[in-house]
Length: 421
Image 1 (cartoon, rainbow, N blue to C red):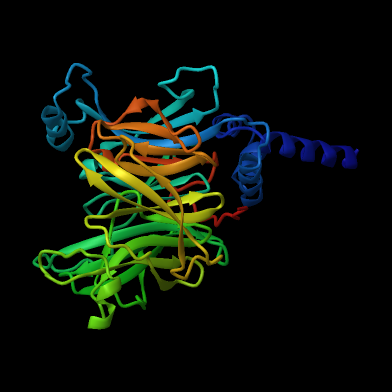
Image 2 (cartoon, helix red, strand yellow):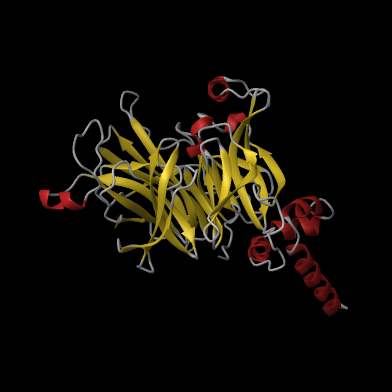
């Protein structure tokens, strides 16, 4: 009987671990033993693994961040921006929309086959400067949002849970200008999720700090690379396989280097700048510098994107309201810590503004000038719209490939979860 009882418990565990988060949140209320089981670290890890490796799902799940004006009759862009920046909570909504994307060869030529599965309204108390709030990292179902202020929010859309990250421990004096560049990812050695913050004081002095999910404060770490500024840039900041990446620049070390720097300047410097990638290893808490590909093009923009299980760099420039072209660069170093680049694909010209994410090997999501998210097919070179719209500037619309999980972001939950990726 004891053996049969044990087998029954194992079958229940296997059954429950394959259920989506919504069902599990309801089942926690059925009995105390199920509540304890669903909250256990081993079950959380098993459920995440099942969600990531579910071969029966033919669609791709995407989380899209966008801001909308509730009154659909308001169409003037100036009125929309004014409401988003200064309107009250009754006039606008900050949404994380869960979308299911799939192939539909017989579908509409203009619109992608897409189902809006859920829409999560982010409470206004958890964000500020909402126009510029961005998805700065996502891992195992947790989304990290950061704005132009000092507000960083962790949320799990699957279980509708939020947590406001504590204020920085390195805040400067009020009379000193400051910028902060936030990243989020997983430390596989310590088995904990981390937020990392790079702060710049008066454009001259950089410091770094780390916050671990489940704690109540930041701790300062060594910023061990020599750069002049990290540039929080929509579409560039990226977490991938234990490492977080930012766009940054430094002044040339000597006149000999001026032939290979990006032909760009900042108003306060008047000097040519070399753009580099700053990489942060979540486990070792060490920063690295990676050179970007040599270019002679003026006013170039850049994005990092995951394509075919590796990171690629996309460079592009603008002509009017839309980019003239996109070039996709592959880094030949398997660890992605060296600046050895080869151009592997060119897209030109299309009516899109910023690359967001690949959702298939030949389909890339992009934001367009009107605030829509579109999907571009590399093979057919065609664009299809998604049935959602963002009222804010297109460069602040976000979309990431997403996996369901029941990992809590509540600071009161001290459990350190096992990562299965």
